[in-house]
Length: 242
Ligand code: PGA
Image 1 (cartoon, rainbow, N blue to C red):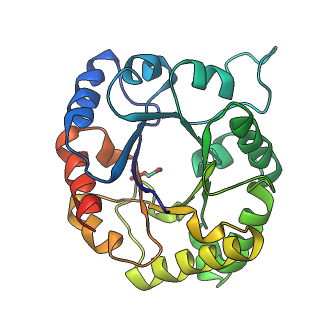
Image 2 (cartoon, rainbow, N blue to C red; image 1 turned 30 degrees about the vertical axis):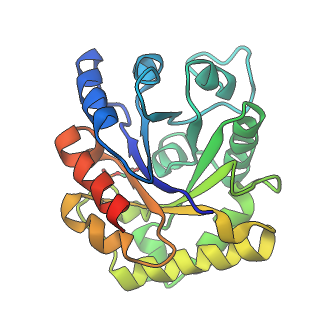
């Protein structure tokens, strides 16, 4: 059974005053939708007390040790998280993370009983070269551990050129990539048909319903429009109604 997930990625945004927004999001009725916030690590334990799911934005490959500034999956779980993002494009770009690293981070998430939301997606150059589906296959093959299941893993398709830009692929483009991801997962995993696949990149209240109507789109990973309850709760409503 595929879970419907409305995931908010707060990135490096949010001081303690932002907990009020998280409270308003947690108090919003979500029907059959899992509402998930991935706040900065400084707010995670506080927001994990609320009635919504929480996740980290990244985790280390090790469960503890001499890694100044990093955070482990065990620490995220200890703070109350049930999920963590791995392989977000900003980690791939800013921190040079490759598929093998993301695979190891996702396996570390499983070891801490977290669900890994493994992020993949093409740059504009790759799309314009016509290589999107090839890259998606490479990223899935490299980033998703062999021990992935529909329970411990969610895939987030985020075209890099759509993140924070206001540019959104056409519904046909999203449908093509999501169907391709589904086919890839179904060929590799016995429960590949049951994985949730999220779309991410400039999702907002005004385009959410159209995106959630696309086959094989099981929710969204939302950046900018997840910071305020007034922006995020209509997206949750759209998903619940889809
Ligand atoms: P955006 O970010 O919704 O602000 O485009 C999405 C993401 O990076 O997860």
